[in-house]
Length: 125
Image (cartoon, rainbow, N blue to C red; front, side, top):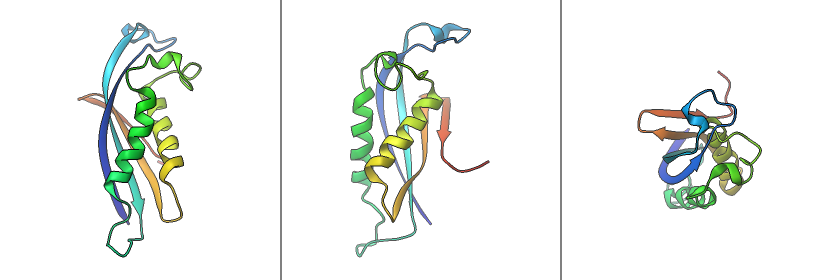
């Protein structure tokens, strides 16, 4: 199995609903996004999917959130904009853009700060 990874970023603000602490107030992050894609198949050139394509499609999703107040845009106008929910959102949305019979998103890691991240995949623990 080949696993490819790209890293990109975006900036946005949010406030966590019903959170018993400072994060319930409006604040911002410079989020880092890691997207891991897996494939067992290589094309004639010897690649599974071009890194540029993974990055391009991830940036399409990131652009929806970049410089936004997440609590005001779908799906986070109803879904609490936690790092956990943001990682699942990227997993699903990037997957819609790049998954095919040979390639699929394996995992998304969202870094809220340089020392705090969450990973989302559809594997079982």
